[in-house]
Image (cartoon, rainbow, N blue to C red):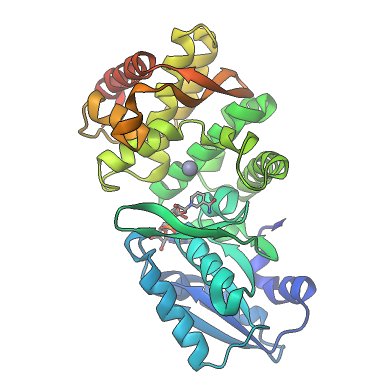
Length: 354
Ligand SMILES: NC(=O)c1ccc[n+]([C@@H]2O[C@H](COP(=O)([O-])OP(=O)(O)OC[C@H]3O[C@@H](n4cnc5c(N)ncnc54)[C@H](O)[C@@H]3O)[C@@H](O)[C@H]2O)c1
Ligand SMILES: [Zn+2]
């Protein structure tokens, strides 16, 4: 993983160092990203005899489906790509997840490189090796663990990102700080304005630190059975909000922000976290807002946290913040506790949502 401002201008050198000399590279991207950054991308390859073959897909979560992966694979076959072909994901998490999945199944597996272009993909989705696509009945239900050969992140490409995407992605940085690094939390409190203003040095440091926290957790648990669950802080309720609102109206980070607020209420209610620490976390989170209100009852959200109504009666795993910089996975959260936390979160939403 390399994080470096203006890395895109030197991308060719980084790729050849990590993957060896190539004859051709298939680049999965979207027309919007290519129109903004394709020129810089191509100029880094100008002196090399490497064919750059862009494969375009439209932007949007709704294209993250098997049919898109099939189309891309057919284009690669027509272009003569064999098992030694190199794929590159040049875009946000949607493009990264799909390209990774294509690489996992194309001729039973080929190599790929990630060049993430959103804040979320630079700190989160490009790391950890999870790839996949959505089904109509749910998100990320088809997929594979297939880590990229390398990840090259250029904070400078974030200059064209819509501000709401940056804010939403930064929620995952606050999450990382809360669950694993109190110093990073302090640093974010002091540097969040500069991060949101797109200051390159601040972005670089924030990306590096978030990446380190995720990498440390993933290295303990590559296949997601134990520690990796910690990364789901705020996501139990966050995913429930996304499902209840049919993935419309809120960005992922915005839903996770509300989910974190619910976790804070739950943690304070069982005296696992002090009110003072919860308030600091809540205030830092809301500096990334304002977050949109949404329509869903506490009952529906509670049902959605189970994913399946049959499991409603049983207690379930939950990531509990217990201090700034520390979270634990607990197994004994009851329905009543979770419902009360969701209700408190909905009250906060009435006061602070927009
Ligand atoms: N694999 C994992 O571990 C993992 C983890 C978290 C999230 N994800 C997945 O990531 C996806 C979300 O990723 P995302 O938040 O990056 O969203 P995204 O890929 O949809 O990108 C958001 C928007 O920003 C645009 N964009 C991207 N880069 C840009 C740039 N530099 N300038 C201007 N516009 C740009 C895109 O075209 C898109 O419209 C979801 O599908 C989610 O499931 C995966
Ligand atoms: Zn997330």
